[in-house]
Image (cartoon, one colour):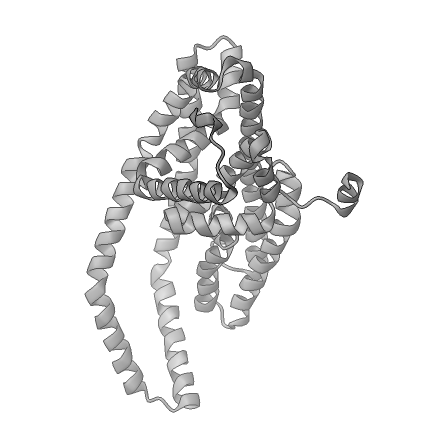
Length: 359
């Protein structure tokens, strides 16, 4: 029989690599729908505890799901309103920023003329040339940006629908796995599902808590430096933590530019950079490990590799989804005997004492 055929190790490795290559290829080809489904699954897991609690209070499942979605929409509407108010205040002050920006450019031109002996006329000519090049390419840039934004918004509108069905048919999907892997594995399937829910919920709730703490630290640091719109810039940089490792540094660019334009000394911009570097150090070494804990126990090397692969495969969406989904894979690997070595490879290295005891 086919199940009794024994293959040499080299053939097994070749088949494994070929299978992984085919899966990655299909993930790339079907990235739009897979990204949509992936975010919907994560939001479903995040809303599941509230939905389950409402059902315990004798809410019909459909009504419970609608209440969860309404609460989510209310929170998002509040955040969008606060952001819109900050952006409106920011736009009102744009004329002043423009004047200060022009003054800064004049100072830079004088500095370049004095130190590098580049005449102002040559500088202006070069700026005009670069501006013309930028204008020629700006049409394509704006068109692509609008197209990408519209596609993202249209896809995002489908997420609540997917979330509704994932929550409504969760028992149906669980029975599918019972039928696929046999009733004898029912307890193991339930254990894996419970662990996946626990890991993902711990990661997402922990990430939200970290974002709030980092937003407060960013805002306090910018406020101490006297940077305008400290709350807006601090919160924006905190939400960019969704892009691991580099998000908070991307968020520091705008407040640094604000400091250069509005302050008399460039040392304020260095101070802003120092604030964000300090917050990132605290976040990476103390805040996130303490709050998220060992629920998502992925070693840093595996996390970096997965983030790079996720970014290359699905762009920013891949960076956001990489860590929670590699955590889900680790749970699955840890609970399937044949895949335990891969779960071990993804996890944190054990302490020498534990290894010596094992030996």
